[in-house]
Length: 195
Image (tube, rainbow, N blue to C red):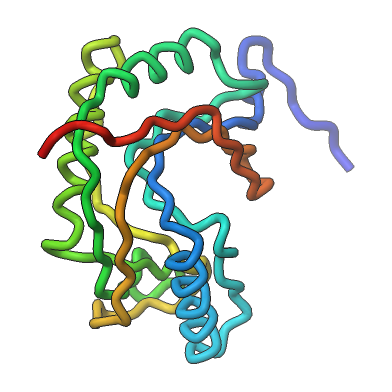
């Protein structure tokens, strides 16, 4: 077997090991209901995909990046300062449809989405984006509120689904161990502002 060619200065980049993102979690009863719905969805699709466990179901408000060899402390500190500056009243969220984030006809994630029921998530995302900009973190305007149910699902048209509704009273900063399906909450911020 031939040896791999090595060129100075062209080393492979280090593996990404740690992710950082802001998220909103459903309460435990709602998460259990969403998990049961995801199980039915996987069974109906007759695929080997496994639904996400109830304790992993969340809405990503803002992905902050993936890093090699741990999270950069200054970046985490800046994100924490930004989150502490967000002031917003609690709100209700409702997801009432299921769709695919796959490129037709490939398999991909099956997700729950909503229309008017996710307006509060848009407002929270926008407030967080403004606060992140104030601490020097570049904006990312793309945001589609969703709850991922399972990966590797066949492509499907958007269709109505059993509603998942909960009161959003806080958001959290999450440390994700990339590729190991492990999330750790670094900090939480209650929504205590006025409407």
